[in-house]
Amino acid sequence: MSSPLSPIPAKPNLEKLHHLRRLSHLWDNSLKIPGINFRVGLEAIVGLLPIGGDILGMIFSTYILVQAVQLGLPKITLLRMVLNILIDGVVGSIPILGDLFDSTWKANTKNVNLLEAHLLSPQSSHQADEWFFMLLLAVVLLVILVLIIICVIIIRLLLKVMGI
Image 1 (cartoon, one colour):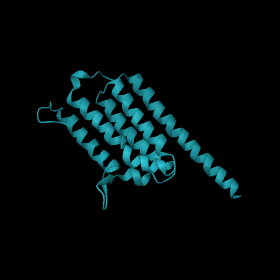
Image 2 (spheres, helix red, strand yellow):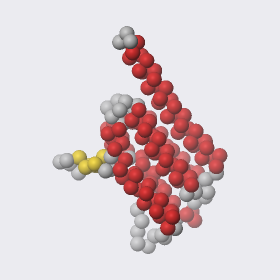
Image 3 (cartoon, helix red, strand yellow):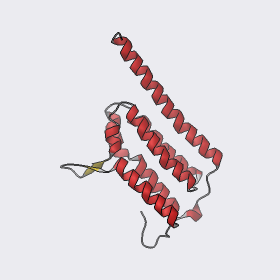
């Protein structure tokens, strides 16, 4: 994303960006599918667990969001990051179709790219308000909670049908 003429972010921010880039790569692109030029990450594997895998993916993605707030990303960029997480979590929880979607959407890579764009041009950004972050975090946590509740309901129904 950066070019030789791009401003260089401060060293602590650069180190954090590299750390988040490595985590994003692990979660979104670390495994090459043999025979084709396509990569998936651990999220595609963890996402095979019904609902629970998508909850874990959203929790991981929320870590990147928290780091973005600490680095002072503007509200609109944080909102875009939250939407990436929500789309990934909600669509990803659909059996089979969601797993295919997870392997192509790569919300963490998208969010780290947004973070990097901000760090390369901070003068065009505004500090995120604390209340706005709390609202965004609450929305993400609410979606995670709803997915957990759906999982519990499905398990209860399955146990009831099986007579257990």
